[in-house]
Length: 313
Image 1 (tube, rainbow, N blue to C red):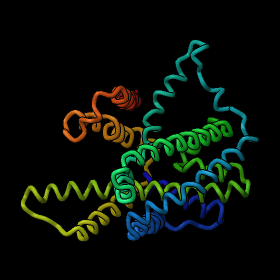
Image 2: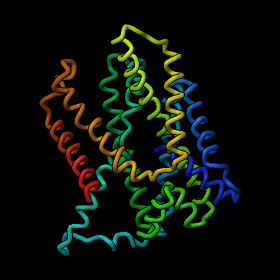
Image 3: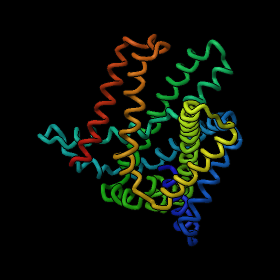
Image 4: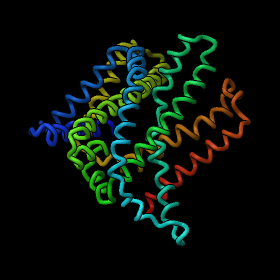
């Protein structure tokens, strides 16, 4: 999904902002994905540190852009809502079906492992308490920033604009850059989108590589074999390069992928599997018996039910 997003964002930047002819998609996607994967060569510590440095200017610019859109608010998108007060169920149905997309959007679980290892080395025995505090503040900041930006975008665009952005398969930042034709948004939007997509790609890549390596090592150990970590990392990188390159070249719709594939997988991994592990893994039983566990399970079930409903419509 991120390989598709980065390709479409850069292609839109080349065509609409630079006024040039974009390279063939198969070549452009290969260059961009290879470039992002090359950043991983700097190591996990450097990536985690770079992300921690980039987050503050990134949040600041995102908030400024959301505020910049305030004069353009017209609320045309809200006029299409079928409010419960008028006897309709459109609002609740929309919110229900939006949950899988929100689960995917706020998911940052792949980088948690690298984050935990880095903080364990930094804080030692205090890492658990420190990480909980860091995550609490970061979650509040993330939700407040993203939701304000999302509402600002929705209020400044019409339903037709939102459908057009989905049809063009580009990020809302790229669409805003092409829609308003204001120099600040035209250049700032794609830059923010590229930074955001790259950060997300790297975070998910590190987690996916760690999980993929674990599966391969487990399969090899069951056969009495092993492979050197460097060789395994190269094989994993090649596998991910080929798969993401193929998907970026085919250019499937990103929102449809989230609704039908990304949403259910993440909902199961993020909500249901940890709760199962809490009851089955002895080291995790210290977290059982909490009311928050019930909330997590219910949220996961609601997200999955919304996905199945949207597929059966």
